[in-house]
Image (cartoon, rainbow, N blue to C red; front, side, top):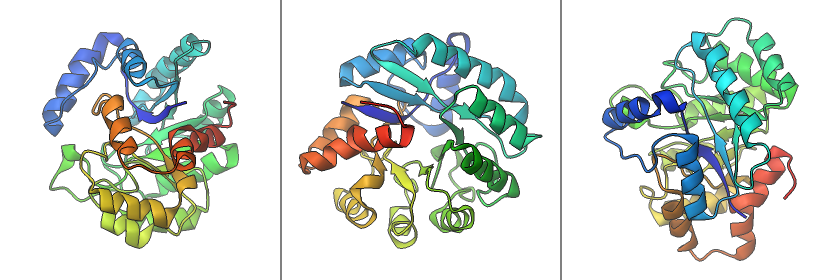
Length: 271
């Protein structure tokens, strides 16, 4: 079984334009067309069973439209053999954060995505603290971008490992997922600051950049129970990242945990 815990897709009518814009801003390459069908095709190539879609609110006014899209996607996908599960998005400047978080829980969402760089807000902002405390109250997973974002090179990193540590210790919630292996391009700081905390790391947009030695040091220090396989598709190909990880020749029990068992436990869904 294979679960990709960090992917992105967009409504069909804006996917092409959005992918083009994001690729230009990051000097990146897209491996799908950014649609649900494109992601399913990538899942088929990788023999992936579940992908988690992580929408991002770049402004608070997008809450209603993005939530509606995610709800519709989940309804259409619920009986599929290869299934996309969409989280919701939250913004730290949203009004009535508690009411919105309760609404998302009531609508059946399993988690939310935040992105400090796209939202131009540091992770220790009171808006994020409120979101995380509500997630703790309503038992919702929170995935956050962590570390450098290639679209904001030269700007202060909004969720570096040091600030992530401060927030995790303050909120004391064990269903937080730090994207990009704890902090994109800041992996030595991840080793120094985060590996003793009860927090998950996903592997999105990591394998093509991280040195194998650093990856294994973090895995050894943080523990195999808190690592989630993820690609960041469409910005990485699921097959490529799966094969890089397989090339590390880890024990099968470690692969099973990273590829799907940890995710199933976190999502509270059966195999």
